[in-house]
Image (cartoon, rainbow, N blue to C red; front, side, top):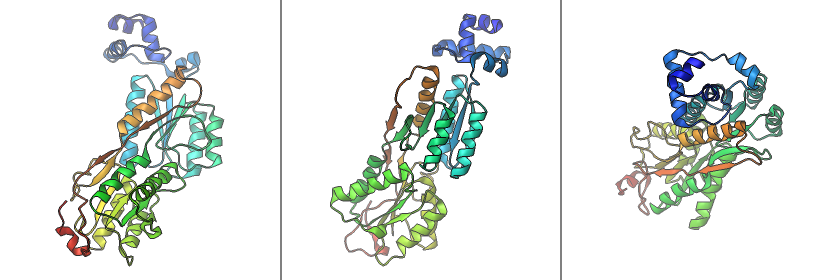
Length: 344
């Protein structure tokens, strides 16, 4: 450690603070220390450090679906911030299985992680109890857990859905189908509430059949789209409330030999790398995924370091409507096959 201090031209106490995460160090000094560590090849003794500080410098991250680009981008941002702060990450994916989620929380607790960042699956009392029993700082991502006080980073789901609804309504759409996520989750309920808010705001009567449950899964969204588009009165537009489900929507339209946006306008929630590579390019609500991950990591570090005390803080970020090619204006009285004649 002394060699690192000499190479970085800082005190040994500064090196210790960077290595052990025991106090705040300026970004400039941290970069010098990390550069010296890499140059010298200094190896930190994790076991000795843990015995001395009572910390493992490890954070547990629990997500529901690692195949979803939303989660992979959020985790990448979390890991980047934590790495710079001297923490490692233990990642667990539960595939939206609540029992497996509880097992993962127990394993991370037993591995003595210093804190948890979790995007919760389900909102039952078992999950709240599992988190409470860890006695660890917890940050929730994307969803809020009712009755559990902790830090959280979410987006304003309602206003995000209202923005895409207002856009579709401005194009003349009045029969807008909505493929909902899990209604047992905070996110699923809030996005559906945004849909209902926009209908009420525009004075459009809500039709029960225009809302179909997709449970945030591509295969279920596929079936939901078939139900919407084969109904006696089909919608002129569909909103998918996450990126996985929009894939199911497009597959179903292809199966029915319907063109987007000529026969049906489509908008999605969650942007993803290939959204503008689709044909047509997809109109979406983009979540600030990197900011979500970065904020979650910073909140947790502040809790662990003792800089944050008291009740949980909620960081609420805004989604951004990205208008592309998948939505078109409706011509009153037009049949499904003639809608494509309308201008965007």
